[in-house]
Length: 285
Ligand SMILES: NC(=O)c1ccc[n+]([C@@H]2O[C@H](COP(=O)([O-])OP(=O)(O)OC[C@H]3O[C@@H](n4cnc5c(N)ncnc54)[C@H](O)[C@@H]3O)[C@@H](O)[C@H]2O)c1
Image (tube, rainbow, N blue to C red; front, side, top):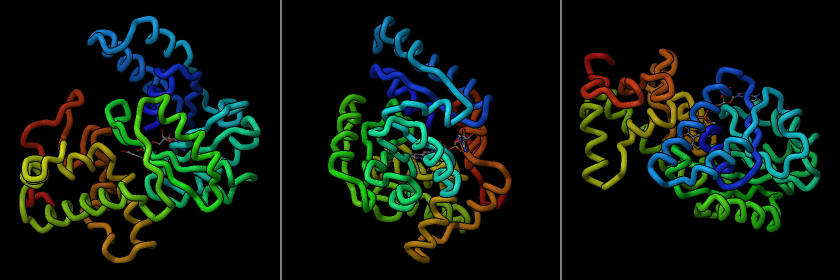
């Protein structure tokens, strides 16, 4: 998600510092952003000068304290783990501009709890992007208990600069979107585990029957089953048994089959494309 978010800000004229503990992830991110911009230029959707400016305005860092120094906005998008998120926002707050906004891209965790770890919780807000960021128009802004109207207004301005649409929601576990999509993805995995239908047919059912752009298993592969499982554990603990993670998801995560990002989830992927007929079969479960 960090790659897509960095690309969105860089291509709307912002100076961006992309921070990750992993040098490998940073190198991959820079390459992907350059490719997205080059594709945009080739398709005539992005001006060549603007693409060059976006790349020139993007730098990377492995250190939060170096990377976030003096920043007006932090979009925290590290792994869906409260302890890691709190550690990162605390480090960033200590070096950011004193008026800087701290946004978390958490899919389901408590913005209030992340904010409570900061010196000034009034400028902490949820800024929930969707995958793939360059295609998805929605950003869900989430008010924690202490988030001020001023922080919401500032964040709305950023959303407008990115050319996206904001909805503002009060904090509840899973917000509006992750709660719905975790439920559908979990249910689809229960159906697959029970042998109710093949992976391909479950996805086709929602694409053609309900006009969803992709099926729940394809979406889980895109989101990452590791991220999806963390969200489900949190929703299970806060909203009860209806969010109990399907054991098949746990099995997939244990096997390292996280989805598209590793080339294998419910489906296999080669050169970024789904391999036809590769969906999990009942006999494999
Ligand atoms: N995947 C999605 O579709 C999606 C959609 C919306 C929101 N989100 C949220 O975005 C966040 C990230 O999700 P993701 O799927 O991109 O996860 P991911 O596991 O693919 O990426 C997380 C990145 O964080 C880095 N990281 C871990 N600890 C760090 C630290 N202490 N300092 C700096 N970098 C660190 C990792 O190296 C990794 O590159 C999660 O909170 C997730 O819930 C994900």
